[in-house]
Length: 309
Image (tube, rainbow, N blue to C red; front, side, top):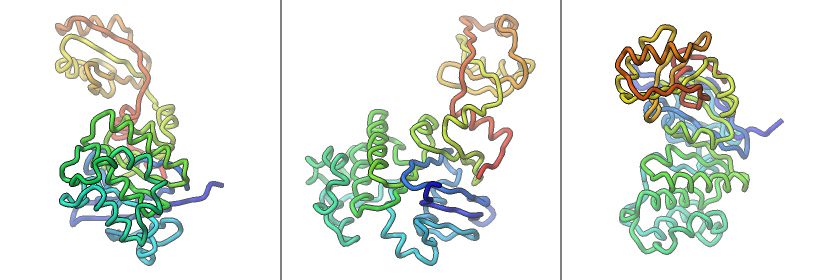
């Protein structure tokens, strides 16, 4: 049986009348990349703040490396690295000064754990005398990750680390995470980007404080219950409205310049669907069967929710 790094049991958090976390329970294995996938307001940041001992839950229990987040908060803070969603380093300090400051807090120095951050820090080291506030988004991301790692944590929490970062920097960042996992670090990451789900070992789909499903990305996709079509015409905006009125249609969602149309029963007759769209004034009609992705699964679970611990 694989060792457990994080264990959460029936955690609840409310802000007055708003339920931020609703009876959450899950485990994260040692050395895995575990992703929380969901939109803004889903409860991801609240959960991370509880697990990093910044915030108290209203009820429930949470253990990090076998330590209770309330009773053992001082020990946990020495064991975890936390990269919050907003860039929180000191803007007026240089790159090197920020890194030195965070290392010193944990009784370490840059030289002692340089091997752990070398692949990341080497990309910005030539800017070590530049103030953090003058860095680009991708460089700030690398500096924040370096500061979160400089004390050699056993668990790393990354709250939406790629938000606002260009596509190339996003992929570089995930390559870094895979290399860090190989060193034995447990990585818990949250993201609103559905395409990043496939880069995790396991994911939890979370919405409105509820975990709708936990599984490997391929496991969630393989359990998608509907038949799915990709439909294109010359007017994507009108297409979405017209497809929702098509007999037997399930969910209809925009995906770039096409629409994903789900059917809960038998596959429709393509010629009938094409004729229906032609009658509605659509041209350049394309209809192809397609495979679901994580976003399709997320939308389906929102319509027919199920909680999976």
